[in-house]
Amino acid sequence: MNISSFKPAIVYTIYIASTPEKVWQALTSAEFSRKYFFGNSVEVDLRVGGAFIVRTPDGAPHISGEVTECDPLRKLTFTFNVNWPGLIEKLGPTLVTYEIEPAGDAVKLTLIQSHDRPLSDDILSGGRAGWPAILSSLKSLLETGNVPAIKMAPPERMLAALKAMGIKTP
Amino acid sequence: MSKPEFVYVTYIETTAEKLWHALTDAEFHERYWFGHRATSDWKAGSSYTFAKQGKPSVEGKVLESDPPKRLVYTWDPCSPEAKRERTSRVTFDLEPHGTIVKLTVTHDDLEEKTFRDISSGWPMVLASLKSLLETGRELPADLPSRARENSCA
Image 1: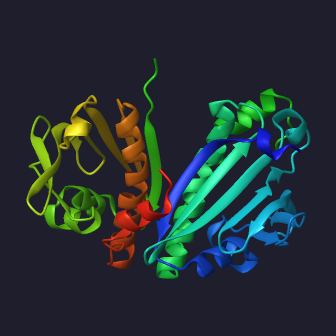
Image 2 (image 1 turned 60 degrees about the horizontal axis):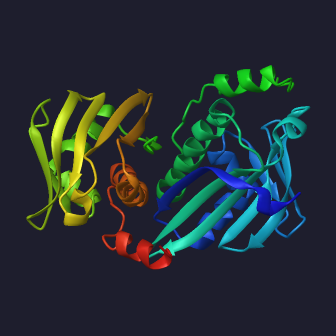
């Protein structure tokens, strides 16, 4: 996989009244992620080559990948591939980067989702809908201790586009 | 030649009425919009002004006003460099879902410099708005200058 061939397709910036340590912990801990990531838990082995897994509430692996860059409290890059047959062959891998920067007493968190080929707006609509909800929840969790229940409809446009490409979605 | 548009979605635990008030009340606006106070009667066809410490910073006209669901206004920053680019447009769509409101801000009719400026500005303003509504405290007043320190642009 040639990292330099990946270009940003989705960029989302959010500012959080918290510290880089707390933001890093929330992004990389199973316990925290269950609260803001629609009940899914993130397990990540924080080293280059380490496994990155997102499990659904029943414990089944839903998304898997590998860490490609790890600069604790500052930057984490990993592949993020939903476990649907045919997905990686047809779309290529998905690369996600979190960048954490202090901004005075707050933290600037930037999410970048990158791909090694152009993808349609229909395919990207899933991430464009999902990331703002996930990161808004993360901000609420760190600032208030509570996560408001954001009910997300399944990303129909994305699922239809994937099916049309022959990818087996549930 | 296509003009870029900037879209930002955030979810805030509040009501659509409170969020509408936050977008249109002068005192509230000043708190989360880093000192910029917005004044208008917010009726379609009326003008509005943002001013910081009495000095106008942005002005425009309300195009659509449908409280508490949708507010659309033109966007004309007052600085001489900004005046060289065309007037752009801001749309706020407020969709309540239970205890949360999904806020979508669409900023379009943009030329390059305005696009770059507002792309870095909106995430700060909307994060501060969310913090103020959810915690009672806006983000620190020095956020824009501290965020600029870190960026290389």
